[in-house]
Image (cartoon, rainbow, N blue to C red):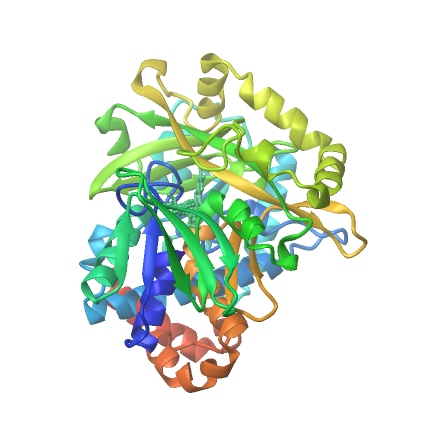
Amino acid sequence: MSTTLGSILQELEPNWSIALYETLDQSGQESSDPWNNAGTGHAALCELNYTPRDADGSISLTKARGINEQYQVSRQLWSHWVESGTLGSPRTFINALPHISFVWGEDNARYLKDRYEAMKAEPLFSDIEHTEDLDEIASWAPLLAEGRDPRQRVAASKIDSGTDVDFGSLTRQLANHLNEAGAEVRYGHEVTSISRGSDGRWQLKVRNSASGEKFTATARFVFVGAGGGALSLLQSSGIPEIKGFGGFPVSGKFLRSTDSAVADRHHAKVYGLASVGAPPMSVPHLDTRFVEGRRTLMFGPYAGFSTNFLKNGSITDLPFSVRPHNLLPMMQVGAANTDLVTYLVKEVSKSAKKKIETLRDFYPEAETDSWELITAGQRVQVMKKNGQGKGVLQFGTELVAGADGTIAGLLGASPGASTAPSIMLKLLERCFPAQVESWKPRLQDMVPSYGRLLSEDPALLSEVTAATNRSLQLEN
Ligand SMILES: Cc1cc2nc3c(=O)[nH]c(=O)nc-3n(C[C@H](O)[C@H](O)[C@H](O)COP(=O)(O)OP(=O)(O)OC[C@H]3O[C@@H](n4cnc5c(N)ncnc54)[C@H](O)[C@@H]3O)c2cc1C
């Protein structure tokens, strides 16, 4: 998020001075690290939680449309940066990969068919294919079909224009570019608190982890892009807008294939349905990944519980985030989400054998010895007060900005990295309203569809799709 915002601002205002402080010794090593997330370019092509069945039985595409529009913005900005040399070869961070939704059972197969009909009629998803034929599924993703009981009713939908993204590589390339273009990028530097100085500017207390040296950095505008660390920094700033917000950490674990022959036989992201009570980001998926150009295969995530807000954080993160203003909303969230609590208890106590059994629902012939369990990143789900002042759990991301727009931060998890460009463009509108009008022509160079919806403009959609496929080398 921070390197995306920094890179946009540096291009819009090359004379502004920008500083980025990062606790770790490199950027992109927390949630954006490829082994800490799932690297799906979330465009709502295969994630079933974005296309729920409404009470009237119809399939709602509202969420899916919104996420796809956001991902189209990401594709355009990354294309622009590839062409301007800000990013290197597209192969270093993005790869074309079919996105498949896969279900079994009568009700689920009916749901998937209805979803297919609804999506086919929508310009953003019109290239969707669907089948209930096991042989055809085998031709899309052989591991799903081999060893499966042919009497089981299965269904799959596929969109070939999906992507896998190495967000760690993307982040590091943007950070390096920021540095080369004159921003001050300091690794091994932790921001310990933020407060307002008497001149109205923000004062950041910074600590050099290696030397222990402490200093104060001053800024007219601060973006708290600290991932799981954002809540405590925004709390330290004292802005009223952060009152009532809390964080609920859920950690992720994946099974990673240790057999490259198996990984080589799967070329897709296959998403299934989440179990009852599971948070949306825990939807199980059998996932081809390209990390540093190497093909790998993962399955998960399995949820875990830790009170850390960052993988490299501390177990005191959750207890220290509790304040008088968020205690009640947090307790209300706990009481109202017993399904989630039950799901987490079950997940945390799941044995290695049970984990493999879940994998076998997708890949029936999976061998226990060919998989290792890895710990992925922490996600901090947002808890906040709703309109009636009651605590609710939210699964998306939340931009929190001070009233005068001089400070903003991002809370929450999903779909996160895939939608960073559109979230940061929204931040510009919220925090720099006086400049945005004059930035518009530049922003339209960077993102040709800026200010327009592709779902409402099929001609622009095909133009943008063709151009981004070319720049990002995503043509099949
Ligand atoms: C298991 C899992 C799977 C996911 N799968 C996907 C996916 O498939 N697709 C997708 O789009 N998104 C996915 N996400 C979400 C995505 O990874 C995040 O939304 C995104 O990486 C967040 O980026 P960020 O820049 O906000 O945070 P981070 O990448 O976490 O960056 C925050 C940075 O701030 C630094 N920091 C923290 N506190 C301080 C401090 N006080 N001072 C200085 N530096 C600090 C951290 O060290 C870190 O480098 C997944 C997340 C998880 C955990």
